[in-house]
Structures are given as C-alpha cells and as structure tokens.
Length: 101
Image (tube, rainbow, N blue to C red; front, top):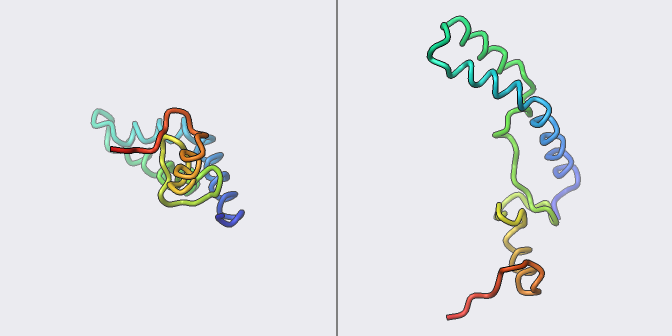
C-alpha cells in the first residue's frame, strides 16, 4: 500500500489538471500555431510557464485504484499487475480468464 500522502498528492494534481485543462490547451495551441506571430507565440509560452507546475498533465502518475502502487499498472483496469492477477483468478474481472494452452 502506498503512503496516503502520495495518493493525496496525486488527487490534488488531478484536480489542478482538470481546473486548468481548457486554458492549458488554448495556450498550447497558440504556442504551437505557426500561423500566429512570433510575439503572440512568445506570450503564450510565457503564460504557460506561469501556470502552476502541477497543472501540466504530464506530471500525473497512473496509480492502482486499490493499493496506490505507481508502477506496473494496467490502464485498461486501473489496477496494479498483482491486483489484476489476484482479481482475475478470483473471477472478479469480467472477461479475463487464466491462459492455458
């Protein structure tokens, strides 16, 4: 089980990303638009830098919903590999069966 503080930090980042998502996308589009003038693009880049650091979506980390483990998480399930295995063997994940050949 991950520390509660790390899980809470990640939830805080999720909220910040959601809060600034629209503004972030607009500024990013302006900064990357070759049709805009250099001054407009520079202003957009400066505005991006002034946004909170944790408002950047790349700072988010996928964590297991149950344990909070940051590594080895399956995006499809939102669970760590150990929990996927455990729940699959128990039959709690629909459509997942143990391979045999």
